[in-house]
Image (cartoon, rainbow, N blue to C red; front, side, top):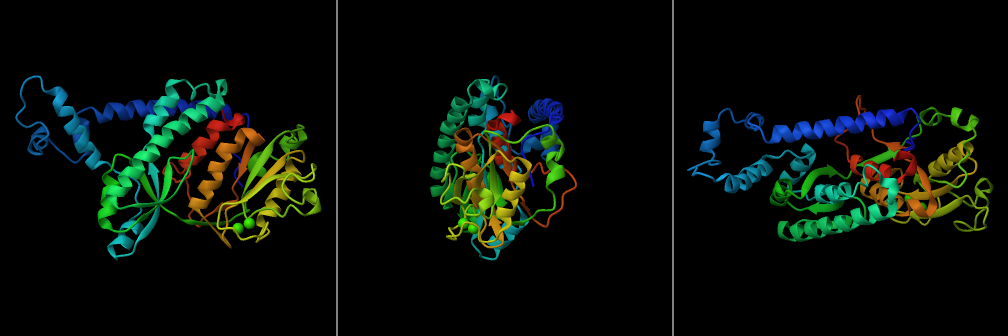
Length: 351
Ligand SMILES: [Ca+2]
Ligand SMILES: [Ca+2]
């Protein structure tokens, strides 16, 4: 169970993390434009750089013309996230479905320029619109690129710089990995249901004892759906009906199974949420196809949360799902990094 609302003690930690991130970015910037870069690229001397033609026939005052060439060289050498399994499947002649994370630093820079990142509470809606408009351009550029690269886009998202694509062969994969528009390529993995961690992870029962009951808020349950016809949810006939109904929205993001909860897990999780915060409302987001949930459906549900956060005052997102992979440190290279970062930027408690 993952709640995005941090405990009070996490705020200092968050500030420390932000400072650390800035320091890392500055350090990275220094590394990129210093001679040590040659070593990181496997080049042991400036002679070798010259032999690669990067600074050949150097006339006077040519720094301006050399720079783009050197940057182009760096792009060709860039390392992006790419699971070996994708490469192997394509080499066996199998088409590969994957999720591409798009380079959106221009959109992020514009977002930062207006100081929204430091003080997003100033105008959260405008900040989100601004970010969305820039992402629209990023998406459009990727559509144009994908036509040339013979990559088919089957799903994209309003506020996430990501797309579900079909990669037909090695050549298309090569084009993707070399494109400055692509930051990473991930498998569209299937997640399983989990409920091993729950109340201790969200500081319960301490928060309830302090009187936090969730009045005026909504919790998004990204799971198998919620059977809102049960008395515990207000015997609803549809979301929000009657007015005492606890479920304000229900939607299938995986192919519609025509059931409110085809499994029962989501109804159980929603019940736990109401036990913790009896006054909150529930958004029931069904991302499961049977016992598994593909990332492209999970991303669509998280995108919905970003779009609708203000409408329902969503303060928490519950993802009781995972895979058999066990990590011993934070997943800095995970497919969840982009969507979690976007959620944290719109959920007030996480600002
Ligand atoms: Ca359903
Ligand atoms: Ca389902």
